[in-house]
Length: 574
Image (cartoon, rainbow, N blue to C red; front, side):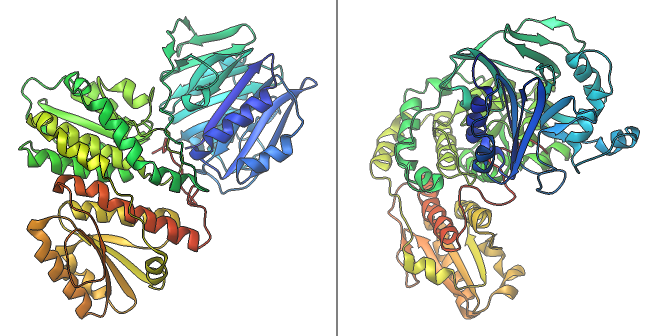
């Protein structure tokens, strides 16, 4: 959440920062701003809303040094005053910040001589810096010692100095042609740099025309190694009017790309499993948690005890750890704050950790000794689609590898990929569903997991208050909500529980609720028919029409599916 970008050099840094913010907009699009030096003065321009609003304001401005920010609001409403960059009380320092200052209220009380212009924790941060002694870097290092919480910050002073600090939130720095850039996501640097530096926790840096200089938390200069840029696969050849639709349509292509990379099993064979391998625990948030639930089902089917946990619950719960377990952390971005916190906690306890991510060079990848990439290509829309499908697919392939059945399953996987259907939902069904006040999703077993993900997609981009429930639980409360204003979308892809699910549908119909069945089994219910593939692969097929349903409902309501309100693609704060 929130994206920061900074640039200095023999170039127009304002343009480079603006272009970087456009790429980082997935991290937040509530507001944006840029600070720069012009005629030896520190100037700041901000705007509310998307980056294009800021672009109009900075058109024609040239400066060789600038910092910028695109915001997802945490502290303070969406206003220009709360937009970054924030200035110190003496107008001498500007700051952009990704993270949360947890003790900002206590710090604010100590800074009682400051006149406040915003409701943000970040304005407290910059004023704390301004009150410290020393040069800009010394001020930042000393101020950070009083900060509780997470931060990636870039500060620019009126003399044109830029410094950085980092704790838990991501920050990368690279040499580019005629300059230096710092960004929240290496994707910004893909076409600008061949390598980069990762700022680690409690490290600091400064950049100028002479290069990049790194420091530890005590201000001692340190040497860091460069990392090779690992570019995303250029999978986005299909482009519709929204990223979300394009990414759904890319699903078949990226699944094929993923299998191509796993076909020889080398990525799996490189994983270091615990010596006495006993169980698999998966930890994730949001959509990635749903893929973790499906992964747990795959592992249980091959006889390995497995559970999936919500990262924010696992971190503060009383879970019993097992030295002989493999802990898998699932995250599209590899920067999800709660998931990273769990991974760091378990690494400190010497547990075996594996990152399953879609993002090369991510922080989660660096924490875990094992990495399984998903090869989905860059996913820009906030609501995850193709990345979710690839997460489920990789977890399925991993279960085959662990069971020793990877090679013998290759033919059916290739057949699945060759005939993979991108099943849309027609306008008639979309119109019908949109007439209901209440929308429920039901399923059993793996179909309940698909129901959870389908309901989440609908909520994320249409703001319709739908929810999913295991169909066997209908009689334990939820049937009280079913009436003629309700539609229940039922998913059924498992033969062994088909009749149970159909009985649940009859219960809905008896209460005058309407039903849409998504299934590969024939029935008398109104249905969207799926083709039949091996049962374990059906969740990768059945989610597609639910993704399309959310997309079409969103468009029907006049919303932007790529940028839903109150959400951001990369959740880098707790």
